[in-house]
Structure formats: structure tokens, C-alpha cells
Amino acid sequence: MESDFYNDMEKAGKIMQKIKGLQGKIRRYEELKGLWEDLAMLVELAIEESDESVLDEVKDGYKTLCEN
Image (cartoon, rainbow, N blue to C red):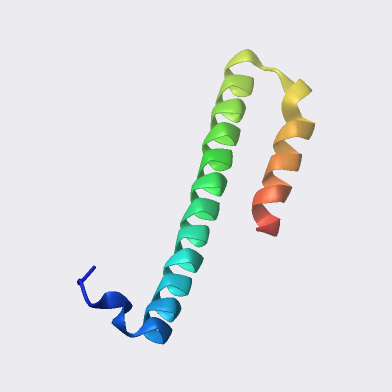
């Protein structure tokens, strides 16, 4: 940031709020991406093992993804 960034406190505050909001969105995206990757791996393993016991867990995870 420029050395005079905080000279205009109102503008600096607005920019910092926007940054904070964007960081929150990025964090949420990364959480959802991780959940998606975990579910994909779980499904892949279940298919390989012909294991239907994880079906409820996959459904719950998919529901969580769809709600967000």
C-alpha cells in the first residue's frame, strides 16, 4: 500500500472493509472446494470398493454444498 494510504481515513476504512469481505469470500470458497474434493474422493473410493455405506454421508455433503 502507498505510504499516504491512511491519510484519508474514511477511504482507507472502506478499502479495508472491502478487503476483509473479499478475504471472507475466498475463505468460504476454499472451504467449499475442500468439501467438494473430499466428497469426490469418498465417492471414488466407495465405487472402487462397492461400498454403499457412505451414501448418507455423500448425500449430506452434497446438500451442504448446494445450500452454500
